[in-house]
Length: 47
Ligand SMILES: [Zn+2]
Image (cartoon, rainbow, N blue to C red; front, side, top):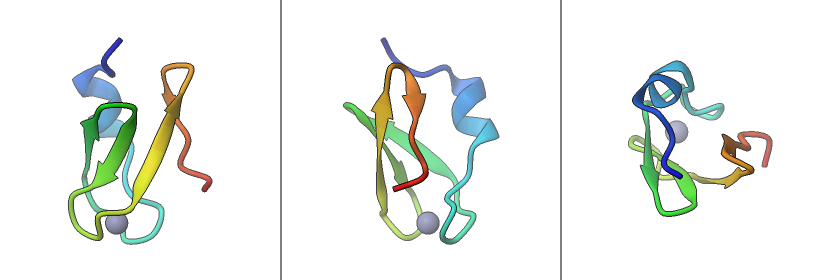
């Protein structure tokens, strides 16, 4: 199930504070390209 646009607008990259985009089972920072896994429908930004 895709993330809602709302969630993507709420989160930002923990490294550079950039905007995130969703791709498959990850959210990816548009600025520094760091990938974070989406686990149980929630982006895990702690890795
Ligand atoms: Zn970033």
